[in-house]
Each structure stands twice: as C-alpha cells, then as structure tokens.
Length: 332
Image 1 (cartoon, rainbow, N blue to C red):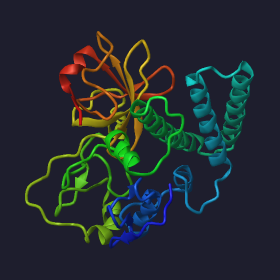
Image 2: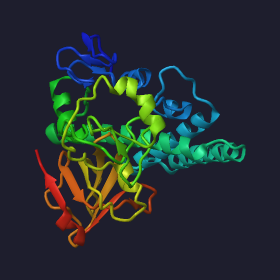
Image 3: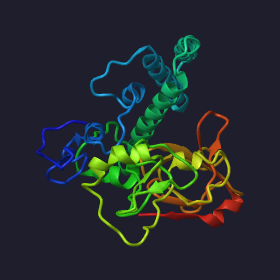
Image 4: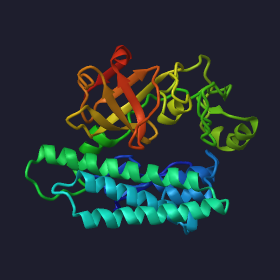
C-alpha cells in the first residue's frame, strides 16, 4: 500500500502521514512500518536485525540468500495449500499435487542447507510467521467486507471504510501509554519468563543485560522521563506466553484481538493478533465449543494463559471449560 500523501517525521526520523499521524493509513494509502523499524535500528532504539530477520520481514535492500529463499518458498507453498483447502469449489487433484510437490522441493532444499550448517529453523519460522500474518490480515479484511457487502465480487484496500475495518478488526490491541514490559528486552527483543532489569529512571523499559542497556541509552535518554512509582505491566505477548513452554504464564494476562473467524462445525477458532502484531490461533475446547461473546474485532484477555501446539502445525492457545473463569471478551 503506497501513496503520495504528505508525511511528517519525529526526532528518530520515523515517518507518519501528516493528516492522521499514522504509521499505516488506509485513507492516505501509506505504510511506513518497515521503514520505521529501520529508523529505530539506525537511531539505536533497538538492536539491528540479522540478515535473516531482515529478509523475512521484507528487508529494504538486502538480497535474500539461498536459505532465506528456500524458507520463503516453503512458507508460500504452505500458505497456498491452506488456501486451496478453503476454496469452494475445491481445486483439482492435479493442482493439489503440484502444490504439494512445490512444498516437498523446498523442504528438500532446506534439509540440504541444514546439513551444510545453515540456520534453517530460524529462517523457516520467520518466513512462516510473515506468511501467516499476511494471510490472516487479508482474509480478515475480505471476511468483514463480505459481511458488510453481501454479493459484492470485488474488494479494494484504501479509503475510509478500509481504515475502519483495519482499526476495528485487524490492528493490534491498543495499549496504555507509560506501562512497562519487564519480560522482553527493549533493545534486542529477547524474551524471558522472569523479570529483567528495568530502567531505574522511567521504569517502563527493560533489558536482558547491561550490554543492551548501555547500547540503548544514547537513544533511550531522549525519551526517558523519571517516574517515582513502578508502572503497571503491559499485557503478555504470544512470545512471552510461549516462553513458559506449555505451563501457565502466571506472570500476567495475554491480550489479543480476534481477527479472523476460522470456525468450523466442530468448534470456534480465531486467528488472533497480540499487541506487537504477532498472529497465532485461539481455539475453544469448552463444553459447547465456543467462547462467550467472541467474534472478529473482539479483544480477548486471558489471565494465566498457556501456549499450545495444535496437531495441524499451528500454535496459540487452547481454551478449555475451566479456563473461562479467567477469560474476558470485550466487544467494540
């Protein structure tokens, strides 16, 4: 999504549309998120990504190497197969076989690269995450447009209605300013189940090591405002819940936006986005196989959540009957 709208920059050279002060704006047809991530790295607000991480996020200038290309190829094949399974009418058996062969070829290439000592698993995970987020966002947008305009055969990104759908269905849950995140390093994004050392002045950012704190300080000091009281913590992210390895994350509450309704006749399933934009699934394993009041656009909060790996290879949260006492759903 690109546009020629007027832009403004902050002190770290991050860009926003001038009219609405947004980093992604459907009305102005601009998306500065990738550029702003680079600006934050250049300013020293966070650690620079590795070449693999940069390529997986759609790196601005770097040409992908063989590992990244194979991982991207694999992720696109997986996305294509999942899309074909949702199609009605279903594609031909030949089409399925061709796509399965595509996936097998990329898997074989990744196995070959792994044998050569390449970091295949990291590249594969990043590529799958990128495809999952992109696929869920596009499906969620299409799903809501179809709900609003039954029978409409074409949809278009951009404009006021598109922006409203993004804000109500797709964008991450909004967080309150001034809250702290003690479980993720503000500089390198390392995640831990135990509290990290926080900045003694503002008490809102944390670091996994003295080294990260020292590297972040030249940029952080421009934002660091002294606080006397320790702030409340931000909601947990998917990564922070996953770090507990299936055990209850008793250190907080997971907060996600229910974005894409993937429910079947068996149970409710939603593609959900956390506050940092990572997408995973929430499935209802309750007695009636639903989560009360849950629908696209809802904000789901789960105290003491558990991470779960599903049989189909996806991951996220499996909510059971006994968990409902710790689950709240807020609708706009």
